[in-house]
Image 1 (spheres, rainbow, N blue to C red):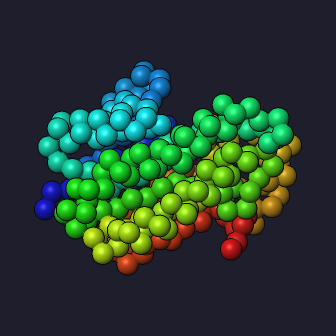
Image 2 (cartoon, rainbow, N blue to C red):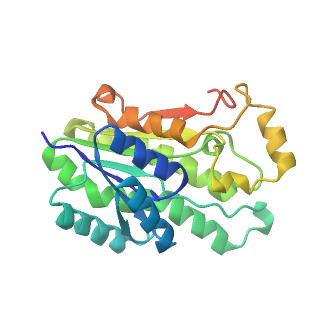
Length: 242
């Protein structure tokens, strides 16, 4: 049997790039979506040996067209989808402009609907699929200055539970990985004093490495997790325990 085809959105940098590399190392055929910085995407593609495709995950039609292009170019359907693309637009809610709310909800939450709908019908027809979405510790516990981000990341969990129930009888599992604070460009924007306070509350005493988040995704994508669906796997060093 040929290697299963995996698609990772926001897959050329940070956690997404680590997920791509982990899946490829495990024997999957991997492709990555991106929306900006063509030079960076081309460099990643060349170094990792992973094909990249450009479209905006907030646009429903672009997602459908992007998946069709992948299917045409690679001659097969996407069997594993990792909804990783995400942004932040932090600010206290009483000062938050509507465009910052909408941008985060669209990119972090609505994109999960856009992408999942683009791949799920062939999954249902084939009787196999894996949909894994990246939430956040702040979708579980909330965070000051992140009402938009926390709402979107919490929404991913509800979305995934409902889709898991809809899809289980068709051989499709739908799960979530909720990372804690991880060594990424996004986290580097956190002020030093704030980061010191965060690390003081992490029992493991450090940030997560992107590869550690990727390993959680790798498990949920594998046959070992065939009986796991509708679940949220937290990878946060003990910062928040449900």
